[in-house]
Length: 229
Image 1 (cartoon, rainbow, N blue to C red):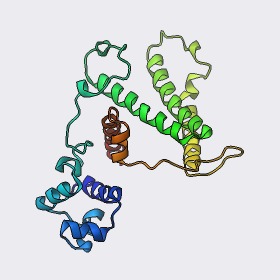
Image 2: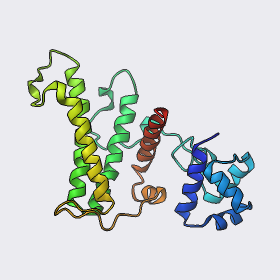
Image 3: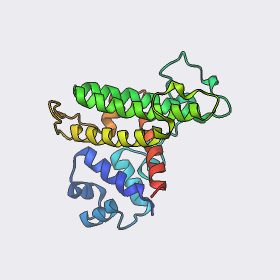
Image 4: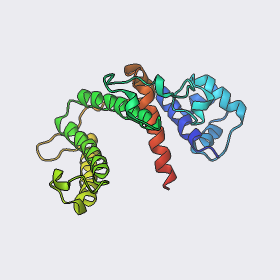
């Protein structure tokens, strides 16, 4: 069973802002059957996939979770915009994977920080930035420490405390970030009061150069997370 199809089918309906009843009428099936499709209880045929793709103006590949791009386009390294043209891609030798992932991460961060700016919440921005900095710190430290000739004196935190400390602090930061994003306050720090309305369409419209990178990053991350189940 395709597990992506029910989720994406539901997402498209909700992003359009219509009820199951309205969608089922437009798609010429019963509401009960559409509910089963959206919950993954029943599988649909190819005819319905094509009909739903036409109705929501997306490709069948997108509807089936084969690509994060609604048009069905597959991403290529040279098609992803380079945020920093001064950095030459040929500095990565042996594989295009570092180049691809670098662009996905950097371009996605453009969207993240723009959304944080729109939120206009200092505490939220601080916690989000801390979470990202911790990830960068940990990856760099592990690469640095891979060679015993690199002096550990660069870091004040003992090597044996690195991973436990980062894991614990990342969990705390993530929890705080989630609490603030949900509108909760911490001491004098007010939570987010007017969260931005975000959909795949608004992301694509507001960030035409970077949207594809974010969607591909999300798909890649969730594929890895789902593989761990």
